[in-house]
Amino acid sequence: MPKRLSHQVDLNLLELFLAIYGSRNLTAAGKELGLSQPAMSRALTRLRHAYGDRLFIRQPHGLLPTPFADRLSESVHQALDIVRGTLQTPMFSPATEKRVFTLAMSDISEQVFLPGLADRVAALAPGVQLRTSQLQGKALREAMADGGVDLAMGHLRLEPEGLQSDRLFTARYACIARQDHPAIRGKLTMANFRQLGHVVSTGSITGHAHVLEGILASKKVGAAVALRVGHFLSIGRIVAQTDYIATIPRTLAATFEYAWGVKMYEPPMRLPPYDVSQFWHERFAREPGRVWLRSVVRELFAR
Image (tube, rainbow, N blue to C red; front, side, top):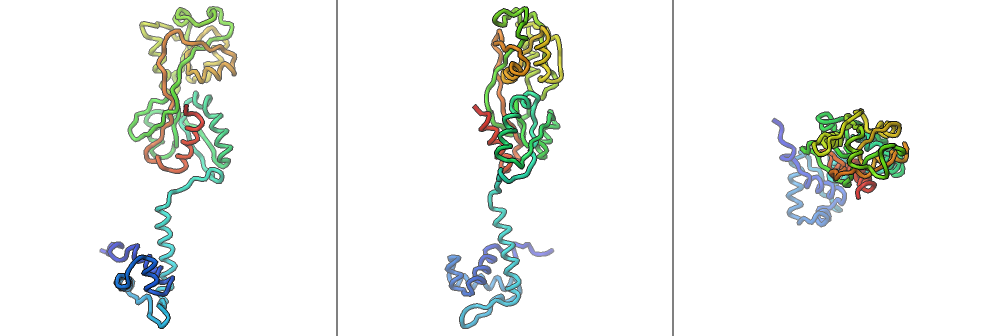
């Protein structure tokens, strides 16, 4: 079996070799390294033994490297530069970086957060591209672990093992109905809430559907679900053109007011608030690009 490298030569000896090679003087190299003359002599003996070459020959005006030492110096320089590089903190330069980040986002997050995030990333990092994914459950966790998904964002039901998170803000629900709804007079009442048909989304990666359907089906409320759809984004237009109502995240309701002309109402009962967070895998907690992306998200949306 070959000897382990650390048993043949160590980094201290390589740095000592370069100090001697640069100064051509054992005393001067010792001062540079903070070593005494005897310590330098012992270290040089170890170097000569490791490489099987005298390395330096004494001359009246200093030390003269052997041809082997001349050849060795370039390799040692490169080797130590590589080792130093492993100790330096990697940098992410937004202005010059070219990279694609994949974000796991629900349709709600795409509607509410992605425009602002895309605009900020384009301004700070014009070579960076964003793409979204709607992976769920185990597939999402695996993609985050292997680096296929860089960041997940929203009100997501994710098992915490292996993941880290940053709560951005706590949000509330709101109800929406069409502007001229014949059954609603001024405010949405509990009677309205029970009697009118509700539109709910069942296909989102968020935890909203589970919570909201549970509330509608509870004995205290007993409201009927009239229509189930696969995406929250289709709810705005449906409500605008029917007598159905919907309970959705307030941030999304505000965009629907602008886009579809629906009216936003306070729910007639107390609904639980929910947290919107960003999630990442612990493997990539210190990776500079992902750290930068999380900081942009936090700056834009944490409140």
